[in-house]
Amino acid sequence: CSEYYLDDQTTANITQFLKDTLAEYGVHVDVVYYVVSDNENTMKAAFHSNRVGCAGHYLNIIIKHSFTTDNEECASVQAIFVDIRSIVAHVRRSHAQCKLSSSLKTYSESRWNSVYFMLKSVENVHDELLKLLVTKPELRLKLAATNNILLHQVNDLLKFFCDMSEKLSQETFQHCIS
Image (tube, rainbow, N blue to C red):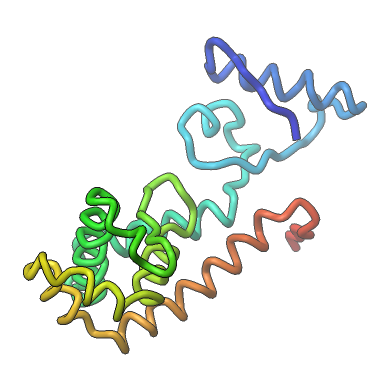
């Protein structure tokens, strides 16, 4: 793993950086090679057909789209996500979370597994939140109307994806392609 700070992160510069770094280890990319990367356009362009998408990255894109792209089949789960996201934003903005036994986690498009962390953090302090939101009846009503069974089932499913993306991100994970 090598950090890179390129003033100009063009396709040519990224490709050259990779070739130079690999050459330091005696690996020359004049022969067949493959690079595992995210789906950023410069990475796609830099490595053309020699790029393999990162499985963990793909998992997280799928999760993100499941919660943020309108889909009638996912409407009830997406409604929970939207309501909880607004509750978490309010509680964090108002600094009221210091009254909770554990902090609420926010959703971030760029942070892996943040849907799971946010939903799970609310599930963990659900009853405390109901008491805390007594001064915000519209948010309290949203939380009270949340289908807790569905929330728990969604968290169980997301936990599986969280565990898999963490396993795929480990340096020691054996990536086998048959």
